Length: 293
Image 1 (cartoon, rainbow, N blue to C red):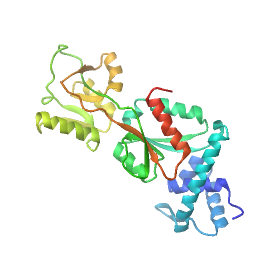
Image 2 (cartoon, rainbow, N blue to C red):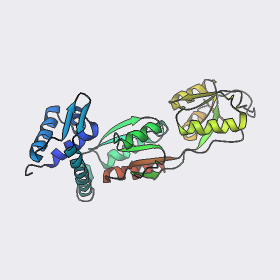
Image 3 (cartoon, one colour):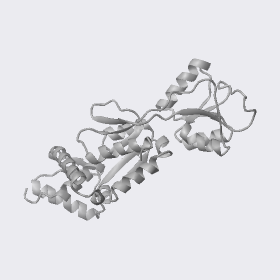
Image 4 (tube, one colour):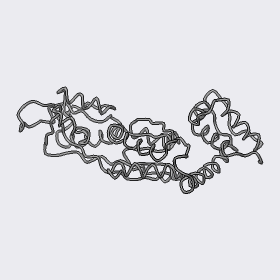
């Protein structure tokens, strides 16, 4: 155990998370042979294999799984030291961030900018997906921080509640300003079929108009807005994203007498093992979403 080194543990954690030496090496800015050498040195120091190697990837052995628990605690302690003792400019880490498209199209660039200002050496891997997939990725430890429709009701997850995202009805320009829109007679562009906004909107429309309402679900908010702009339908879409298009004269807001409930988002992360870096990032996301920074 005399040769146990911090960089070996960090490499071990990266391989365990990515289940791949090559991806771990890329995240740590190492060559693959260097990452492999670190894992071998750690296994030699401990005296046991930590991974089972196969075509499917690197899977932890029983001993490797035991080490993972302690290595994560050690990393958390290291992060606390770096946060409170070491200048944040020197913190060299990577973070896997998953976000919903609503966030990606609104304040994600501001959030990433704030993170890089505080942690210039931080490497961020960003994936954009629907919330149900982000939840599974977080629980499967495939991402470190998820900004999604939340909160996630799971005892292993900590949630930072973010400001609600208001929805508004939009249509293409044209017609008299006071013209009513019959939602039972026009297609409605909305979120993807397997999302909470789609289910809630469909239930509300069914209650008011019956089962014959036509909906155009899409995993792309950009596509929803483009379809509405083209006059192919209307949409109950995020006000913050539609307002700039309204100012440009590309969309018109209208009031059919009701609006779907606002969307609630959370910045969610694993509570155990606790990562001070990820917890700080979640709080920074909250501040950015509230317009505080």
